[in-house]
Length: 223
Image (cartoon, rainbow, N blue to C red):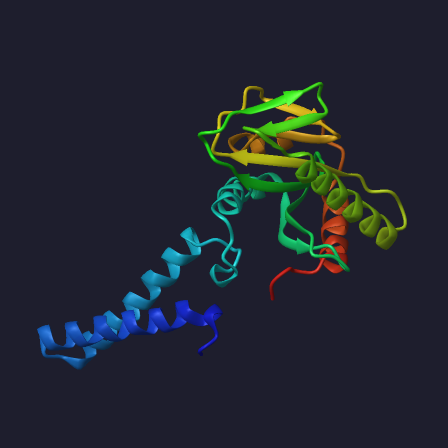
């Protein structure tokens, strides 16, 4: 129970205990106290289910990742499935969100940049955030998607294309969606539109097959 992954269970137990004690004292009835404790636990469980990220809190997911995850949750009803924080075997690299759905397969990396610095591009090949050249970040995103594509394709026996992207939060992005060094770059708020505006290319069966294969070959970064 000292494991940080179970901190919410300790908190839930304390909430139930406190509610039970208070209600029991106020009404001088242990049954009412027990009922209050049970109700408090149920309310906390429902609240966490609706509001807490599926990326474990102990993993310290970035604010950008949590915001992207919130958008991707809304795609589930349309048949999209997402794997969060998936490792590239044999490396320190991580795909923040791998999305599989009717329009294809996508690797989304979420970035929170300083809003005070402008974002600009040169010749569709160089991305700058203020004075900083973000070429290494683009190359990393492209490599991650290429590795995911290779691993999933090998597992399934046929080619699966994974589209790389960089979702940026913070500074204003002076374009909607721009492909830079083979990576789609856009404001974080456009994640859902970027995915859903493409032509449908996968069936429900294909989505399930790719999703399961991706889960096998791209292990969770944090377990």
